[in-house]
Image (cartoon, rainbow, N blue to C red; front, side, top):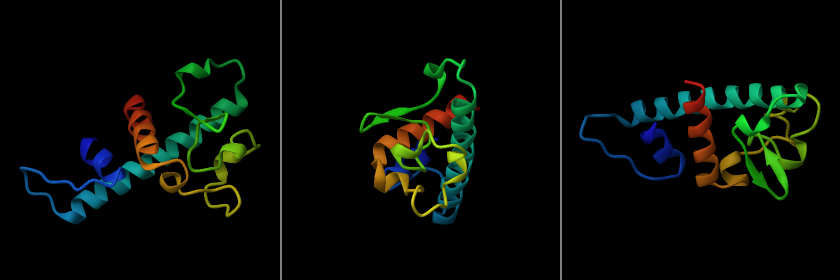
Length: 116
């Protein structure tokens, strides 16, 4: 988890144990893949279950919007089927560039930890 957080924020990683760059990259990619799937499920739940207490959801605020899925723009969070828009050129974003590395890295670590 710490290695993935460091990589997501753009920091170099060194270890007392031997880890190849490929191993670190694979761990980071697996971590991101897992997180992206979790946020899609979370956004779907937020949209379709108004009775749920959303304080238990992993989120952050950005420009007056609550972000449950940082892979899409802030103004698309409430769109029907928004969780399927990650690859859409108008709705999908690179979360690290759009929202910021540290904010998104914290979000990703939190959602993965919560679902372990």
